[in-house]
Amino acid sequence: MKLDKIYRTTKCFGVAKGAKIKGAFPYGFLNWVQVMGWCGQTRCYLCSGLVDDMAAVRVDIRKECNPTHCEDAKSTSLKSESVDWVIIDPPYTKILAQDYYKTEKHYHGINTYTKEAERICKKGGLILTLSYEIPKRIKNCNFIAVVGVYTIPFTGYMRCFTVSKKKKQLIEKGEEG
Ligand SMILES: C[S@@+](CC[C@H](N)C(=O)[O-])C[C@H]1O[C@@H](n2cnc3c(N)ncnc32)[C@H](O)[C@@H]1O
Figure 1 (cartoon, rainbow, N blue to C red):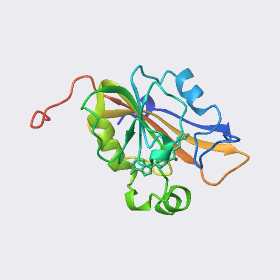
Figure 2: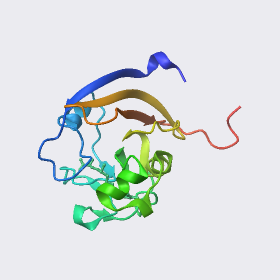
Figure 3: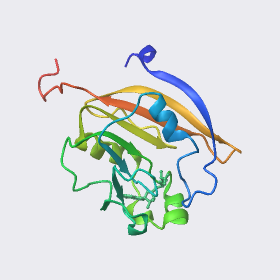
Figure 4: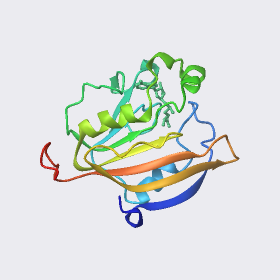
């Protein structure tokens, strides 16, 4: 991994005031992601909550979030390589999953979700994560950005935001020297 090729910084946002869900994206976060060029035409939110992007595929386990796919984001019914941008914003701990969403039975670590994201993401597409957890390097992907995200007024811990790009040409098993 060539560190000098990875964009690294910290970034401060305002809290999403009046958000209808706990753990909503910080105020201005998705806009900043777009400004940074980390965007895609066909988008998918894994653990979508109440995100305001009706043109996108939205996967959430709770039907009250009105997702396009009401299912566990660990293993979705989406076709392989069907979207070119996937963002994962899961409950950050099992306790938060219980307290905020009552979804503790379906709690998974970030690496479970990145595995599914890699499956549904097209070659050359982007996979983004926002969590307390720092994901392992995703199969067939390279990190392009790692950002510490915090909010003012200060609300708890810093989150880790990562952007990974899926390689355009995948190395088949057995080809790696
Ligand atoms: C941090 S919130 C997402 C908030 C979203 N970014 C927003 O701004 O509205 C996490 C969401 O993950 C959902 N969730 C929890 N476990 C899940 C699972 N295994 N599969 C799919 N969704 C899950 C919860 O129902 C909750 O809506």
